[in-house]
Length: 307
Image (cartoon, helix red, strand yellow):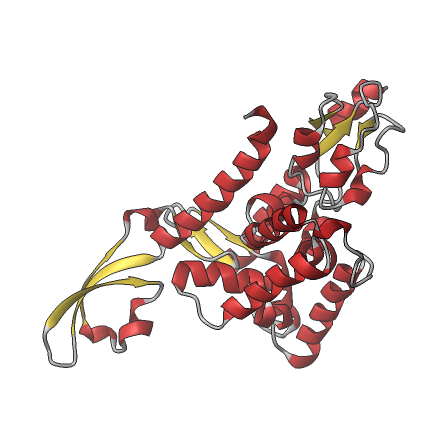
C-alpha cells in the first residue's frame, strides 16, 4: 500500500470530485406532463432546460449534495455559494472573446490561481482533471502491450502545448468564441459524466487511442493547453518533489514512470527540490523509488535546509 499511496490518493480525489458533481447537480421534480398528469423525475442541471416551461414544475427538491457543490469544472459554487471556483483558462478565453465576467467568476479564478499558484502547482492535472483517468489507462495498456518499446510514430516537442495555448487564446480573441472550450475533451468528459454523454465520447476515445498507439502521455504531455496554463500558474508553487542524491543509486525507475521525465534531469546529479514548472506532483516517482531518494517537500524549507 505504501508504494501505491499517491495513486490511491489521486483516484480518490478524481472519483470523489466526479461523484460530488454528479450528486450535486440533480434534483427530484414533480411536474405535469403534456396530458396534465403529475409525474416525478430525476433531472441533472437546470430542470427547465429539460421539460420546458417552468410553470409545469410543481415541486423541486435538490439533492442533499447540492448544498456542497453545483456546476462543473469550468465554474462551480461550493457550500451553498460560500465560495466559487472558476477555470482560469476558460475565463481568459471568455474575456478575450469579448464576454463579461461576473464578480463571483473573477473571485473564483483568483481563488484557483492562489491555490495552485502558491501551493499545489500543476497538481490539478493529476488529482482533479478527469481526462487523467483516460490517459493513465492508455499508459497502463501501453506498458502491458509492450508499445513503449515500439518506434515512435510521431515526434513533436512538449512545448507544443504552450503553442496550442497561445493559439487558442488568439483564436478566442479573433473569432469572439472560447476556442478551446468548444473542443476540450476535458469539458466533454466531465459534463458527459455529470449531465449525460453525447458526441463528446468520440473526442475522449480519440485521446485514448492517441495516447495508446501514437505518443506516450501524448495529450497531457504534449497537447493540452489547460496543462500548459496550470504549469504557468504553478511555476513558483511551494509544493515540490525533492531529491536526495546521497541515497540515489541511479536506477532511473523514477524517470521511466514519470509522465514529464524532463522534470527529473537532476536525478543522480544534485540534491534539492525540482523546480521545473511542468511537474504534476503526482507522486509516481516517489512511489517508484526504492532508495528513499525522493520525497515531497515545501520549497522554502528545502532551500533553508540546503543552506
